[in-house]
Length: 370
Image 1 (spheres, rainbow, N blue to C red):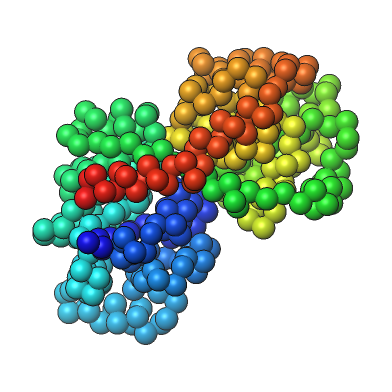
Image 2: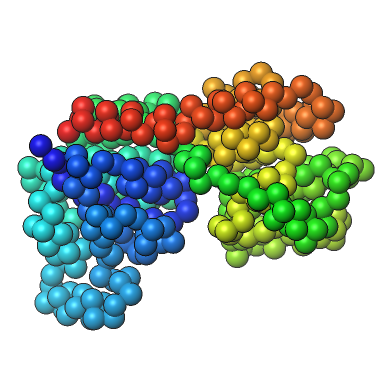
């Protein structure tokens, strides 16, 4: 019998957790599942979903102004707009399951828990992210959830002490979307003055302290006499740290820090410029971009976060097991000195976390917990 699932997420944008959901929604068998999606707002992947998926956007951020006016009207009469909208969606979809993707949509946990409906929360957050949400949000996410699904071992281990039913489903990548055009790569190198003698390290993520953006400066200082450049892919956060690091790097190491900003069209072409991949995050639950780098056969230097310690094996790169910058710099130096790297092994290990390998496991998990 076909099961009806209401998936709930923030935007369906290009964050790691939402990319995983996008891969899942695109490929879940419509003969087995009737799928409805409810988003807080409209992200860039929203319109690319298959037509059989019914999609809804929170009244507050709906592109149609009449829905925004309707929200104001019902709110004036004391009706909770989100509760009201979800009630309508539930009546229409007759969902058997509410599947909430991440705890980063706190408004969902402010509505009444649906009766006689299974409630699953797919958790992609860890302790730092927990510190950024209200206590009541995490408390209700745990209380509401019949099952909490962790995206990695580290997340599951964090959830087990506070929830009785925890399942694991690894995040995964869609290798069909990882395409590189060498002609474009060559043009991008020319655009950013990347020379054949340069060694390019790529980092992906917002320019935040948690992503290690501050570590760019001591790394550039350590390799000041080498042709080392750092290519930073990800949104530029308009804060003092971004200004501070970019200002000093531009003054002391002109042209050595290349900040691309948020990039979608040429994301993998920029990745392909790199000779090495750096994971400088102070905390990660998984790190999809590390898998993408491995699939592109780029050697890895990572802090001991997310799945790095288990994923990065011999001849794939190095892990700073004690999470010190000295270990990172030592590992970078080894890669600079042409330590043997098995590129086929990098790609092969990344394939273990591909959609083709993980989606059947996800479907098995859904069948089991439903």
